[in-house]
Image 1: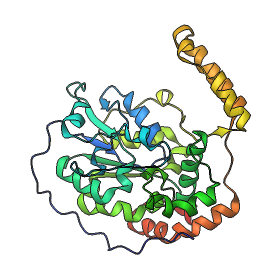
Image 2: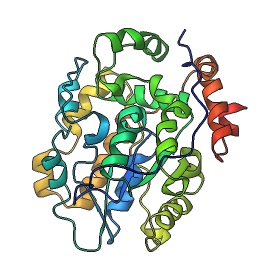
Image 3: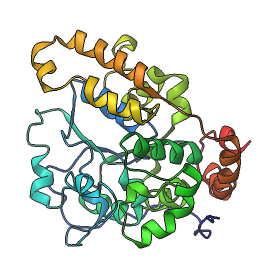
Image 4: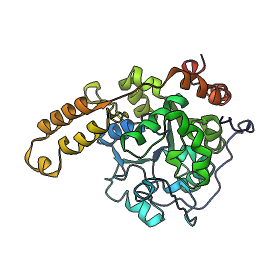
Length: 322
């Protein structure tokens, strides 16, 4: 059974910033995670705001490791995952080159929360005034959604519980962070480096539960935090990045044949392509629910960390703890 990490030190007040002059093109705000908690939805909605510029590469992961650190991952499909990784300062600054004067510059790398031991230090050093947005989700449901995502892409071969148990071995073999289903769910430990280094008014903590209840209100909170004009309710995009999987191997093969391809995009209007995509998805995909026994089992793994998170923030985590 996976165990919760050891207790960490009590949160300390952030130290005053002391460091080199930040790069001229450093971001004004950063969405740091967690993955499968609404970060893609938030990225899309903010990207459509006229006063915001978000990097076209949604997850550059630039601050996840020190610039000179060599990294290599060996899990299934990790090469494609690595291809989006931005390593040099020049390459990172180039991501913001198209921003117009007056626009807030931002990015959304959900690895920053998990890699906070490095990323919080780097962001504080290189973008000390950046506002930090955090979206958190019930850690068991987050892990299950992460697993579903890999099942959808035919990268995962193990049942959910077995994949959770295999995590230490996969980490030892060098699989990328995206495979760390359980490890990414210990939010109290991961938030600590940010809470130690940044003033509380520079960090906005949100939950996926809030997003599901009222996405318009949640986006309004983000706009207020970033001092942006509010977005009209009818302009708020629906959530589209949920992890559905093929109903069977036959349905998986059918999706390859039926989904709109490059030729269809060149010929069919957008509205018709969208309708076709929804029809294909309804016919071939479904969203299986986590088994109740698996949820109860793994909730115990995260219980101590969730209670600590509730004590060190003002988040309502009653749904995770009941």
